[in-house]
Length: 99
DNA sequence: CGTGTGACGCGGG
DNA sequence: CCCCGCGCCACAC
Image 1 (cartoon, chains in turn blue, red, brown):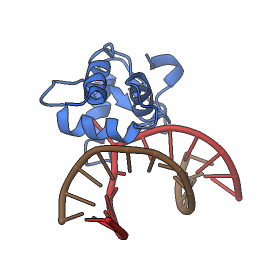
Image 2: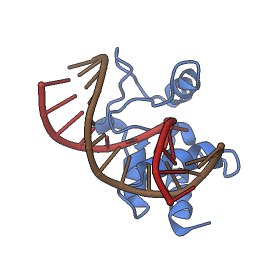
Image 3: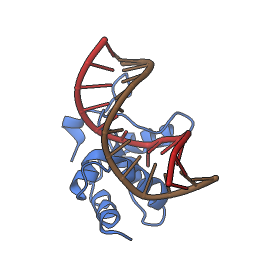
């Protein structure tokens, strides 16, 4: 496994309960600011294996990227269960919850 | 090899 | 707020 992937896994694992981060921010912390897409792929392929808190990663707009019927509901449920609030447009306040 | 595809991000209309 | 385009990058065909 390459160092970037390793770092992504570690950084995601460190997101505290009740807080969130974004794909781009994780990519940045992991050493490659332009690799936000890779972060999303790593999440989809390694979450189970490394037991990652995948649902704590959202996009830079403060929204869940998964589509309704394709995981959106579950991610939202898990986040709300940790106290994360959504506004009427399904938006999360990054200032308030981002690590 | 080209070509298409995203759990992305940013800027613009 | 929505919709597009463009840049980016690993991966599947």
